[in-house]
Length: 230
Image (tube, rainbow, N blue to C red; front, side):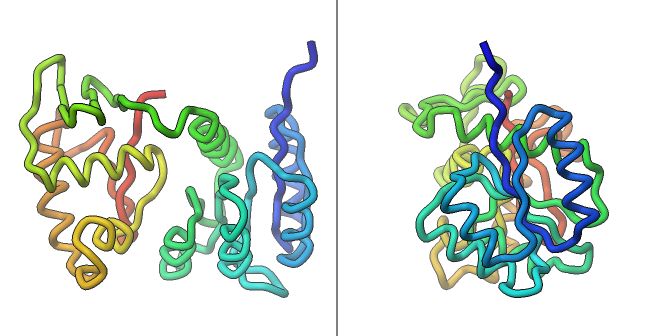
């Protein structure tokens, strides 16, 4: 039986980057397609229906964020964006528009492969799982009970809502703005200190070492990520 090769589309105007990604991804078992600009990328995304997209934000014709915005009008395909190190504002904007993860240039090719595989695995998993796990923590979305090491952990309503939102986006970066908008409303988008307080509480209750968290991770200047069990 032929092993399934996940179809991935690379949208990047740099020939060297596309060549590197093609060699790396094909060696890792992916079927790779390329587009050198945003317009062609949109056409290829519609015709190929890839299972994942690697999208550079600095494209020559369409801004990468505009490509993402248009793509999200009709597709939920996982998108991993590539950005330069000083493009923090662009990265946040892309995540707010629906990107699933990001890497800064220059990046390690095998890290990109690992992140892409993780995105595809999460997409293939059932969206409406009733339980999420990380470390020795279990979140039961039906009963709204959180257990650590089999024992129930008492969370406030706001702590639970924050944890649940991160768990529903497990492994993906969620921006400060997204979290504040979803949990406190649109008028709270600048109040990042809310998140710091509640994240501190969650780490104290759920992490073995709250000062060096393994699962409730900070993306500096951008947001948070919850690493769930694979």
